[in-house]
Length: 433
Image 1 (tube, rainbow, N blue to C red):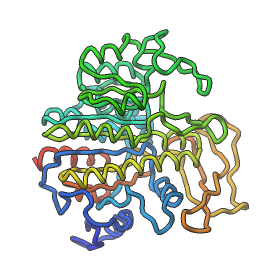
Image 2: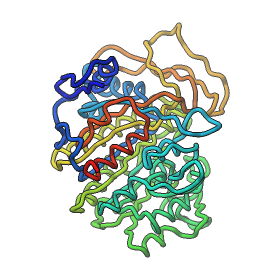
Image 3: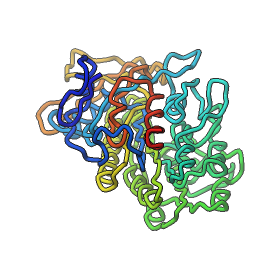
Image 4: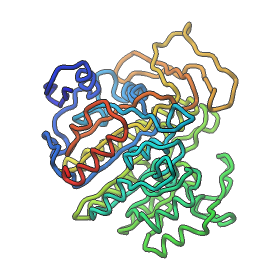
């Protein structure tokens, strides 16, 4: 397969797939991350895996059009190499993956059943990239706008048969995998029933949210084992801790809902700021680090067919990618990978056309939800507009785009299963071994 690099030079044999890879790369500009010149055997000192939950190529393009227009380029599209990932799980009942099976494929290189967190088809624990990084002496971190114990981060730091066991995932973080930095939402899973934390039970602007840890007060246990706990932007900014737990919401750090029905995307601490703190802490380690960064808002807003906040969450992710590429420019041998774990909503970009309008089924089930077209949304820098149409309120089986730069990034410029993302990252951390 040909690879398409930032100079638009085709390398290797002929093939249509190479042209598609080049188009996906979007005309990436130069080597912004260091250590990126055909570096398949070079060691990645730092690895930053960025997951846009539910982010398809169509969602990524909608974010691009609304943010930088037809002639612009997102930070995530400016990474040097591009490819795509097949997301199929190994579930025997469902053809389409969930976030748990998909994240486990990224984290362990093993395809598994939907709902599995860091375990194989038989429920056996499988070593994760976070655990591999720790074995190599690296610092590790998890940053997300979801609950820190949700499917994607959980699949890197825990091993449970069912993703719903979020208090056990929290316990495994502090007792077993011990990431140096854990930042996101989900305070409710760390505190027992009746133990109200920094974020009150049953807030007025959300569905019922209450403390519900099944294993006691896990925040206290974390503090007893060496974590500094923070719950406000001010505390996060001020701390100099080397081992950090930050929880900034009862559940997710936003309110997912259809437009005008209580939907809010305004995290107490923006994803960019959490990531900056994680980089500050983890980069102190001389052996480097592994960091997972996830934007959950894309997926949750797509589940609710909420195009406006899907775009807003995507813009927050791209601002974070820009921060990370700035870090990589100053810290050579940093591998950056941006990828979606699955597609959500069957999102499609369409012209504004009043005669081509979807109809509302009237159902409130996320599996059959179908809204009218969202929009119109302005295309930045032009007088054009576009609408977004939906086919479902659930996941679809579409492949997801991937962009990367840094050591071994060129090995990801291909069509591949998501397990290959794991394999390339592990090989890069081990220096090609």
